[in-house]
Length: 238
Length: 292
Image (cartoon, rainbow over all chains, first blue to last red; front, side, top):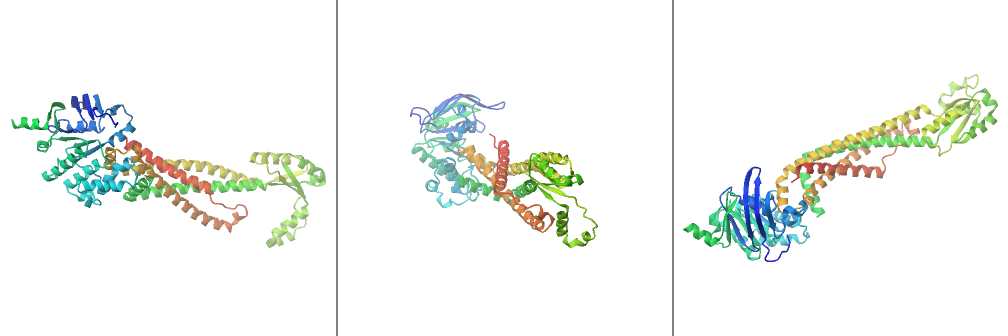
């Protein structure tokens, strides 16, 4: 990702389509997400939220249209550059995607090791981020030894440790109880306050409440609305 | 970073210890067989070289030859490739034979007359290498008048030469077989490891790990299997060599051949080749299994 100017949106989609074989998952999406924005992608299951997020973290390519991440079109880059772009994103998934055979600190350190950080700097950075998410005491635990909420906090730590400009979360609270879900959301809000752009895909309307920001509503692969959270709830209330 | 990859490679080997051990044993057996063929070929070559360096041709004379020995020696020395020619009177030959067969002296004591002919011991120039040239030189000597028979150990040297050739062909063939067998088993082992770590590899990709970062431990793992397999194979070969060499040292072969183990250079080349085969096996496996 480049250090584009402040006006350049961190994400820009222009007439983007994506199909899985004959199934059209995303249809004619055009929108921007500005730097340091807090955005929810909402919609029912199968609306295309996860597919859209995949386009943002280079897990899939648009079958038509143009996706620009901080001004860069990943489709025009050689495959070997994709990992470099991914290092500028922090990703969080509903199923945590932690490596079960590696300790909490090893899972978090993986991001820094993959990015080629100096080895002596890694432990202190990992400790700091685990302290931030309240998981320092579990640094040597294996993920299967932790609760769902704890695992997701580790996943958040892993997403934050590389100081990403963009944090992408796909149903981050989908398998958590309300208290854990709030805790995870608070961690993401803290990262947003520190300057990160946060994009959260969710079908949980309750999660969106009281958070501010913008909601992009998808329905069967189409963008039906782009509204501020307050208006989204006003409309739901009426 | 290398240390991190090596640690990961060892973790994979330990986690899949049974299949890894099987791979190492297969590589060790392949290395043992190939290096054994190389060892025999090398020693046969050494024996041939030593024989060539000490080549002497015995030219046995008929009655005419004995009568014209002073002229004959000039003819022999005129043959290209001949270094020297020493006349051995038949009496000296019999005395030498008696000395050699001192345990069976009674057999020779009852002879009415000396059955041995006069002879020339002909030494060749050391630059005269090449079996065909020695054969042609012997042919030219045989055609000189006065020479009844030429003897230069042609039968056993010929057999040794054929064996050396056969071993060279066999070692090339076995190297090819080893290459395919080792490559195949390493590729299959790594494939299993890749399967077992598929989830981890996917996660590594998601967090921005490069292909080199993801693949390096697999390559190292293949190379370690090659290294350990080669080390075990060579150790087994050394044990076999020691057992055979000790026996041969007291046996009939001791007079002809000084057995030697493979040189450090050859051993290094075998180990390096085995490591390359391990890495190549990993490459084959990863090309199929990790492609995006």
